[in-house]
Image 1 (tube, rainbow, N blue to C red):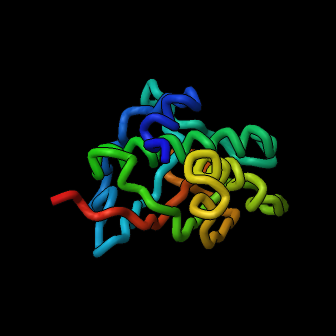
Image 2 (image 1 turned 90 degrees about the vertical axis):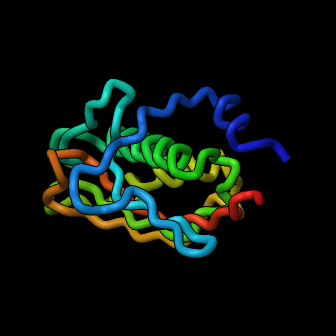
Amino acid sequence: MESLETKLESLGWTLPPAPKPVGLYKPVLIVGNLAYVSGHGPLLPDGSLMLGRVGLDLDVTAGQAAARQTALAMLATLRRELSSLDRLVRIVKTLGLVRCTDDFGQSPLVINGFSQVFVDLLGNDLGIGARSALGTNSLPNGMAVEVEAIFEIKPLAE
C-alpha cells in the first residue's frame, strides 16, 4: 500500500504551515486510537485565510475551494502532531461550518470540497465518514469555512 506521505506528494498538494492555536485549546487531542482535530479554517501557504460569505462574496465553487484549503491546513496540523500522515487510518466524523447568507442552503455541497480531499487521499471506504454540514452567519476573522474532524489513527510504533 502506498504511503500517504508519498500519495500526498504524487497528488501535487502543497500544505500550508500548520496553524498555531489562537485560544485555549489543543489543535489535536489523541484519546486511544482517535485524533480529535479542533476547528480549522482555509489557511493559505502565505498564512492568510480565505475570507467571505458564500452566497454573497463567494459562489459554491469558491466555497468548495475554501473547504479544500481547510482540509490541507488540517493535514498540516495532523502531520505536525502525528509526525507522519502515514498514521492516519480513516476519517470518522466531520463537522463543517460554512459562513453564508441566510438563504444559502447548499452547505453540504460546499463541505464536499473538504471531504473530497480525504476521498482522494484515503479512498472511498476510509475517506468518507459520518458528517454534518451547517451554514452560519459568522466565523472567526470572517473566514469562509471552518471544519473539525475525528480520525482513527495507528498507534506509535514501539
